[in-house]
Image (cartoon, rainbow over all chains, first blue to last red):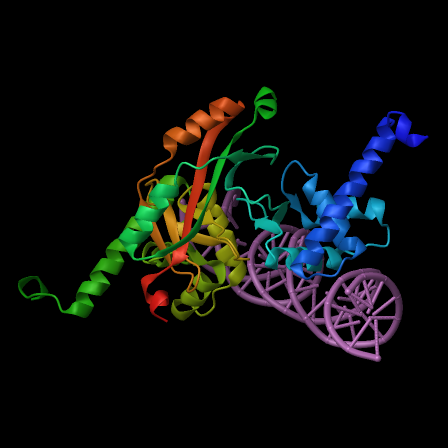
Length: 159
Length: 159
DNA sequence: ATTCATGCAAATGCTTTGCATCATT
DNA sequence: AATGATGCAAAGCATTTGCATGAAT
């Protein structure tokens, strides 16, 4: 009986993926979006990515699971999820493509390696107060800000 | 005798433009670049712009003075000036085109209106220390940062 | 005279769109 | 059944490139 023994590693992964899929389904339904294979898989990919991904990277990843998938679907899916604020879109300096990440609804910034383009999300924010006071000084209604810090990562420094 | 009377406003503008042109010539020569009409005019346009300009905007502006001018020349000029750090390149959020500005060699950031896209350069920087300590914590060699603050400007608030 | 910049046209890369078909509600 | 999502192909926009010509050193 499965209930009586420990799960194998593979079974555990499958179980987690199924729970994830359930979460994405709920998320989509709650937002008033249809549950489609493409959307669930894109959400899964972004949710498990360690840094923001470009549309073509997401597409490549998606194609491994769903070979009939299409790049325009990826773009359309991302736009839909963006409008619902389920994902976030960023454009890094000197990068012609936009990158997307799962919106974990935490205020954060990015530390970007200018050599390998690896992105490390950074929690916490040193400038909320500053942004507010600057806006009021200039007669702006504050709406947000973007901070990216650029440098050379440890691995690239060695090379 | 011109030396004896005050200059008219038009004469004054012409005089200033000629002095500007001289400055741009020196700048180009000092950097080891050839002095061409296109470069001098692009520099003039950017130097007098109140906010960062997109390539096509620069081109439009240039075409009024030099109707034979070409968009690829604008792009090539901007790339050349960028490599010599005479101009700076920015990509604002939700904007598919890059924008260029004269490099006044002052560290600054941008306050951007999310309605009309107007950009106000802001002097001073609240995060230099933060960036350094973050980099050292993550094993990065700091190289710079980018801070943009978004809001709705006074004029757009009224509408 | 040499080196480099330009105009033009064509190509590229990322992203968007029209349309017929298919899946989800 | 109705609404909305997908695949495919084609178009769109910003940017880059090849090449012959022309201008700056």
